Length: 109
Length: 114
Image (cartoon, rainbow over all chains, first blue to last red; front, side, top):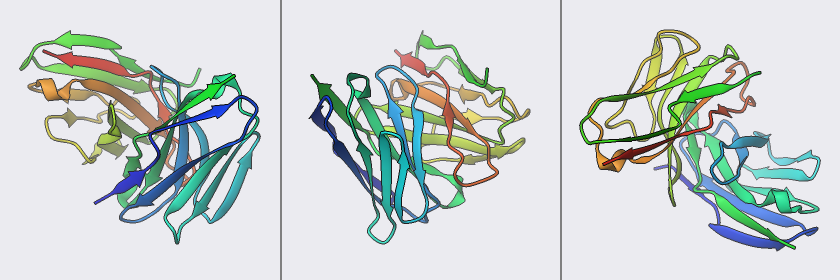
């Protein structure tokens, strides 16, 4: 079966750095996506990895290790508006997408 | 403005009464998909479509139907809704030219089946 695991909830302080981990086991791999979802809203795209290594996009970076089935999203200089759920999604073979249950990040002052 | 539009946004209905949730995108995207989101389970793919007249089952297709007669529209049909289909539903679309293209999500439809 397909399995995407993320921590359920994390808390961090404004201005700090936080790392959200995602491990996956899927039939086939054609890329991993990170999305941000504020409560009651649609998910919005943050980053994409298909090759091993780090992708940096401003305050957000994402890392992938395909051999370990592992990714993380790194958020730097945390702001209150970063309080949201972060979703890890894998595109497997045959154009199917599998999402983790999301990590709720609470940023406190 | 590029967007994915779902209707209705909220619906309360009763068991067995057929309903359709519409989804339309104005980005000329080939790929469209439906998801349901439940607490603790995350987003689960119901059906997806690679292009007009091409649809396929996702992870949780039971109790749902879809059609793709035009590129821009991808309605989700519940022929005989049941309470376990109470959920938050999202439609998404993506350009299917490269692997890196992300999905764009609609604002969601909250369905309550009594």
